[in-house]
Amino acid sequence: MAGLAAGIDRAFAFIGLQPQRFALAHPERAERLAFWLLGVAQTVGYGAFYYIFGALLLAWEGALPYGKGWLAFAFMCATLTAAVVSPFAGRLVDAGRGRWSLTGGLAVGAAALLLLSASQTYAMFFLAWIGLGVAEGLCLYEVCFAFVTRTTHERARKGITRITLVAGFASTLAYPAGAFLAEALGWRGAVLCFAGVVVLVGLPAIFAGASMLEGRSGDAPAPERKAEDQGAFAAARARPEFWLILVAFTLIGLAYAMVITHVMPILTDRGLSLGQAVLAASLFGPMQVAGRLAMMLAGDRVTGSTVAAVSFVGVASAIAVLLFLVPVLPRAGFAFALLFGASFGVISILKPVVMAEVLGRRGFGQIAGFMAVPFLIAGALAPQVAALLWRISGYDLALLVALGLSALALAALSLLILRDRRLPR
Image 1 (cartoon, rainbow, N blue to C red):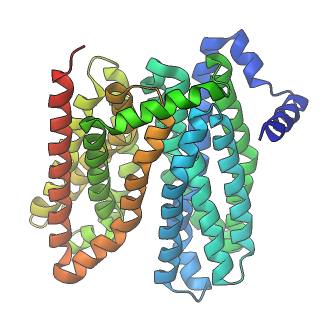
Image 2: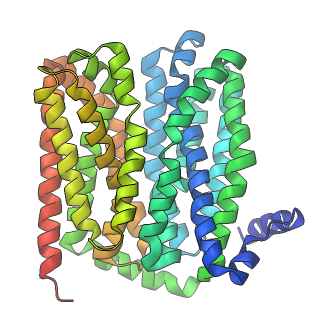
Image 3: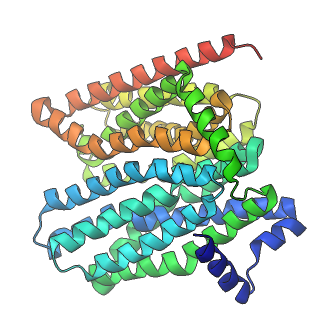
């Protein structure tokens, strides 16, 4: 690992990119620039490793003989693979090697995309998606946020918000790009283009951004801190607050994923035309960004837990609108989209913020990696859970379950807030 790291550093220095030297000379400018660079890298990563599935699904259905079920199975296994990899990536962050987890993840993802573009059998197609799952677990939000929290400490909330302001447009860019490229070049050409963007844009951005944060913080590998981090992780697991955070964010993530993965058929089932459903769904990305901007403007005046509670209420209210109001007033589907997008857009930021506020930053990589596992598993299983509930009793049942899950999530978060306020300061 050390030899590879030194080799990559020399390669970037050869082309004039020396981000750690820049960070030492201009620490504040480097930190701001690093956040935006990581935002660009996360946009590329999510577009190329995650949203590419939805962007090219129709093209794959038309060109490949596997069927939607087997295509979706490969995607689900990729997400489960990310869940398996996340704890390992968290340990890398705690060991001071977060930069290499992030950069290596994008490199693995680029290789997996090349394999995907060349796949001739389902086995190769499936293996490529497992590679994309490894990449997701090494470099996307969970690991990136843990790295930012470790290197920027109390400034992490602002940094994470800036990163997600950019990355919130990943789906907005990936879907039309995938459709256009598949039409113009075929799906294999489209995948190659995604791989090219990862190599030419994502890799330099994530390497430079992560190097600047490491350069300012001095977050270098420190083997003597390993025992301290492991002790902090064990101490965190012994606290009820740890499990309340895990339960709250896993349940709200499951409720969100059940709705978002079936949102088009749900909206049309409840009376919207296909065009109206597409327009409503297109509001999710911009509203996520709007919610994050509102959180940035709020600054540190309110705690992350309080903002999370408001956002949980927003998700539950949006599901209630979809369940009870949209069937009698279809245009309320747009109100659902606005509230749902803005609320969960904030929740995706607040998970690491709440963990840091309540549990502290020592051993944060291991804590974040552990908590990512049920969250990612819930996201992987949510489409199948919603489909099963739909087969039993339609989307009314699926939405009722999602509403119940969001209510339970809010109850767990409320208990967390009460316990945290009673702790001595």
